[in-house]
Image (cartoon, rainbow, N blue to C red):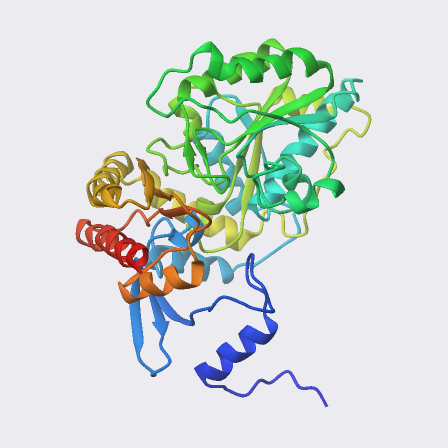
Length: 441
């Protein structure tokens, strides 16, 4: 006989159940990597429950996959959830609206690059990309140009885990190459070869120019991650490349989709990475840090040209509508999070974190196993010469009092913006010490 009541179990029993039954991101259930039990989190610290019954506080160098800008258990964000829950936790967005969503969309229209005047709220970053792709395709269908149904993407790019998003991730080196035979076929151009602080000469943009020139009649949009290619390699590229890509899209009548799910909300030192090149895309994807890491929420913004083009077409409407679109709880906490960010001295704060990462990670360059150390804004990357073993290196990080989640050859950190100088120094010192121990084994 089933019951909804679950008796209390020990931490050991909880972890045993987790290991046997619960799938974690990019994890095997046959030979899973260890998962660490979190009892609480506060500020920049995650409090882990240890097997001996004690707790260990570790500095979160990941901002919970780049979304917890203001750290954990923030009183203002906590209160926003409480206050909103007392009026309504959710209401359908079809035919109804509410102030939390209206206030959020007003802010997004105000702070994003010029011309992005229409906002579509969705559930997650991957869905924001799906929405952007559908917007581009429906726009051209509405113009009577259904042949413009392909997308162009950058190699080493990453845009999410759903089917449409996977189809524009790197088809060879990306994590989704196993599905290439089941995905719609799109075009890919060479990843930008010009580094962030370098100009972009004609050779660096020539492949993009060639593909747009030869295929623009069939291309709906170019999709890219501005300035920072995230999960595809943590690569930083020249704003000049982005500026020229914008110009080429305009020249060849191809929409530009900017995926700022990882880079949005000041992570790169600008409020949005597009600002490094002073460009505005036709469609912009936002997510991750939108709610300060409290709830899942994403947004896809577009220009009047795109929205008018869609709504004047055969359907007369945009053909998408998630059940939890515009969730009031998520919108309320997003408003609170954006208020905290925008009312802070975020530019100087990101510059402070950038300098701390530059100084603190520099010693890692002396390790023979390290290929490159690079920093941009509140992003620090140590690229190893060989892929690291996740379980081994994660255990070392925890021993040194920090939480990181490397992948492949990349050991990287994106700390919460509330991290103090002392905590940042502890984080970078622990990273270098852990790597030194790891490569010496």
